[in-house]
Length: 122
Image (cartoon, rainbow, N blue to C red; front, side, top):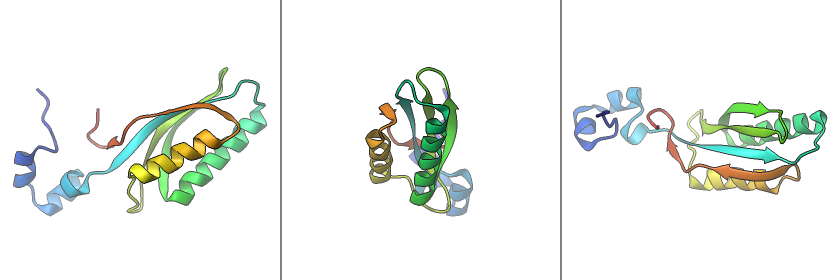
């Protein structure tokens, strides 16, 4: 059975310094995964412009994005948004970014996962 890195018993044994190093307890970092399917028929220049706009929006929010852009038919952007520089990913930020994606003319559909621990999640 896998160990739960966030178990109360384990956290009691760890000092705050150890919790920070292991990114558990109060130092847990949350993020979310998503997939955005773009509309069919977009030219590569429009897809590139959309990707640039998405990366600018993520930077504006103070977080980071890791993922890939599958230029198939339809093109799909999928990946994970995660914290950097002390900015936490919370439910409000998740909703803001998903709403930004959903309102874009290039996007046909968006699916997003719930917030999860980026270091110890499944």
